[in-house]
Length: 213
Image (cartoon, rainbow, N blue to C red; front, side, top):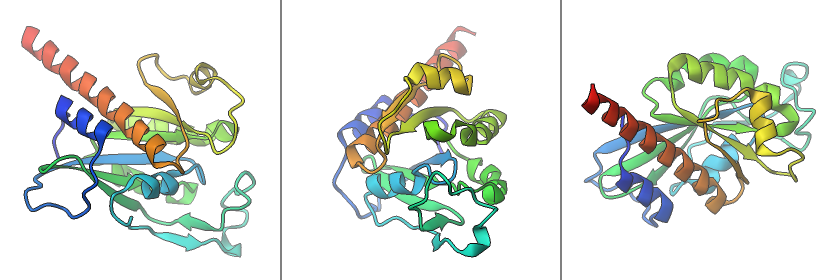
């Protein structure tokens, strides 16, 4: 996996491609994690933006999860991810973006550390009704030193400003925040564009620092 992202990559994410087959010339893969609390929209985002049929590990929710998984805010949810979701976007003939959606239930959080291995960057999806569900994701990403942005998923009309959400999550001012609707491809794509731009800025700033050292 490449540790830096180019301006060309940002541009290609922005304008997109319609190709689905993975080209034989593809040689560079960028691993992106999509994390967040239970039922926040991670699987939905992977499905909406992937150019291929996503690999999903969703299973029907049963009585076995009652008292373990808090579904009080997602009463219409009937399935849940038990491992990872996987999707893909081909940025150009050589570069591919691999999307990994993490399971949100606390009992599966032990899988996250493995997921973050080799990850270039991450999207933290948040629901303002359950901001505390995001704290573990933020903590683990900071622990691993993985760059991330925060996307507020608006399945319903937001009741707080992004700055209020930033303050509640105690996010540094340089961490980008963005609104999205994970059900919509263009909106999910805009989140990936924001992440790509952020990774590019970190890469160029790091290169500039190395050249002056």
